[in-house]
Length: 258
Image 1 (cartoon, helix red, strand yellow):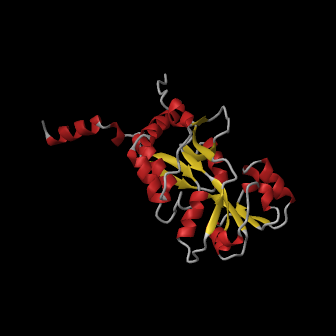
Image 2 (image 1 turned 45 degrees about the vertical axis):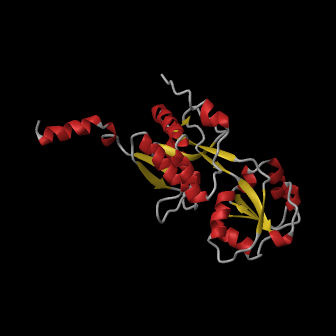
Image 3 (image 1 turned 180 degrees about the horizontal axis):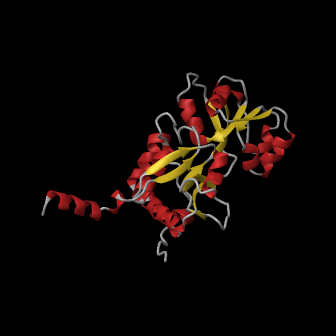
């Protein structure tokens, strides 16, 4: 057998070498989930590994979160990341949840605040992530609608710095985002994390049901692998991405698609 023929047979035996790359629509810089400068981060590494196990290479397209869904629906991109778990759309197909955000309130320890309900923030200055007033439930929305001294920001590094330097009394953001920026801040102020909100699960969206099913199979493979634990420890220093059992196994194990 000639070397050329042997090379051709090797190529034919590995379909992944022929699989077209998949364009994955993702948001913009949000460490530790997305780090644009290095094109890495928890969310990017996770999605890249899932797509690799589908037999493709992920090509990331960075766009504002508000445009991700619109671009997929208009035929641009193959996978739309970070889609709400409760969304229902007959035109699209949604994966099982692949990432979990846990929004919290953070205050400085020296302030000794008791914060057990959004109403406890009524006398505090609050700086939240952009869109928090619309996404964190009715009680928080009621607070935002009637409160002066409430602001939202897209700059979450500055958000954490403003708390640590005492320019705002409380901030609302994802726990992992807070930990990342606190760890990298020059101001090492002691803080308290107040867990007021339920976690938020996000899925990926597809126009092609075959891709959605392949994604779910690859997602299960990742979640059952020690690689998944190591990924969390690398970016979060703790294991906090455990999804509810009904997402982790019950539905994902039913992979006998027609």
